[in-house]
Image (cartoon, rainbow, N blue to C red; front, side):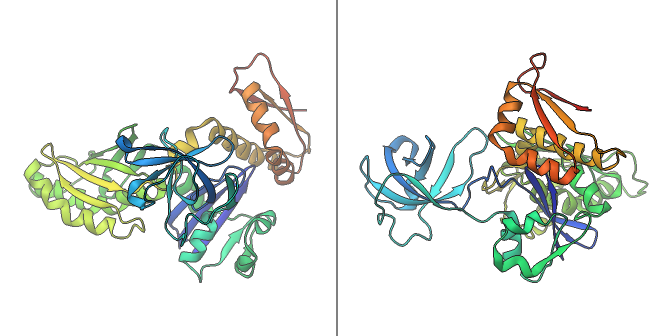
Length: 368
């Protein structure tokens, strides 16, 4: 078992591998942590019975939601509380708060403030797999990790081998190749995640159609449901099996439950609906991978990483100019460490220039 940390400007890709199999995956953005596990001294803004909870003012205009089920009891506006983030902001909703692990939530005095940060993905994996070495390709990673993990660090020229790189890159593709010629399309929507399985034309099984299709679906389910963990797909998930009558789909309950049992978040299989769709609920904690990748920040950081890779193959160490729209330049100036990371990893300076001819979120590179 290896924990691999591949560095890029502003972002590290974190993978847990066993041989050539990718077991877990996450993006780590130290300048933009998702906040899960953060401890705040907050202040009660308003209790909203219709929503079953209380809005808590945190810092910098940020507000979190504390459900009544957390047992805070009657609280009045302005009351100070110690709270911990239990779910990141995602899907257009703010952070969810909890009182778990806080012996006396009311032992708070002073204005709203961030008191401590929660663990990042490397720390979480390291705690779950205490014997796994941590492979890094950039010594700067070690400076961002707790001292207790330094003895486990191993420096390699590339933290991701070829198999891990291919597996990681495939997670941005909605189409998933599965065993036995099967495939699936994963479509996140605001309400739920829809997964459509397809039997394709690869099966040469001579058994009756329903028997063959059931066997093919059953064999493909472990790999498909592992994608929930790798892509951190959460909330309501519906899965449409390939080519099976509704009554036959109910027999997939056991393999679905077996495949979900390996997920540390313990998703729940709710059954097969009247339409024949397998219904699954997976806890929402960290942001799903597609939200991180598809945001303006995600697309910019990916392009910076690709540009670093391209620069390493160039002979002359010429400077790189990033021409950006106003939003892109604002991002790069807000987080100057991203440009510093680029210069260190690409071994050439990065100049940032605003380009009036580009849209606010557009950019291009020039090599002088």
